[in-house]
Length: 274
Image (cartoon, rainbow, N blue to C red):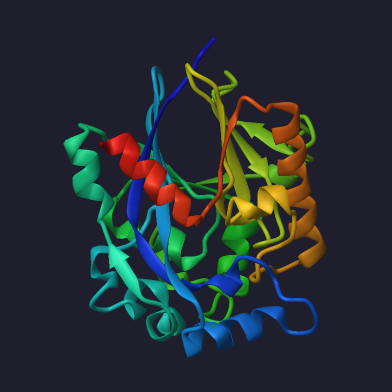
């Protein structure tokens, strides 16, 4: 039974209003949350994680690309003009961290194409990216600073492994899942709603299964009180994906479920590093 080694990485932090955690009730939830962000309401530092997956045959895979080294001084370049004005950024470039581990990713698997997940792609020139086809299409069809995409970051990525997640069979409570290498070690799970082609990543490690939620579950609180975060393209889909994650976790209570931007993740990461 093939397993992968999971190495969590901290690519930086973003200053977020706590209102991102749960979508407010009523109309215009995203707009009201962004207003709270602009006004600095209850801001905290949330992690921007990435993950190194080490496969015995297929080598190293990086899940999400983190932040570009330029993001603190010129955030608009890779994060878009809105992010530069609305958010604060602390950057920990991934390339030096991977070099220290002796890692050389053969591919970058993106949970989705929002700017805080693709900003750092410039650190990995020539390395193929793996992305849901609908998410790739949305980046260019809908891409703008208004919805989290920065098309210019991806437009030079000529080597793309496009995944047809929507056509994949079900896996447990999940509607669609692709077995990336055909050995059950890494499964790309369709969890749309936060974005059109958002995916989570299910791993089989030597110790236990691990579900990397991406932004389908941004905080641990959402795993106990299922409610969508404030940013979504389809609220019903987002809640459905979250409920499927919760259902899977109930079926696998020994597994580790990792939310996308929970501040507790940073403490977990630091304890592991220590």
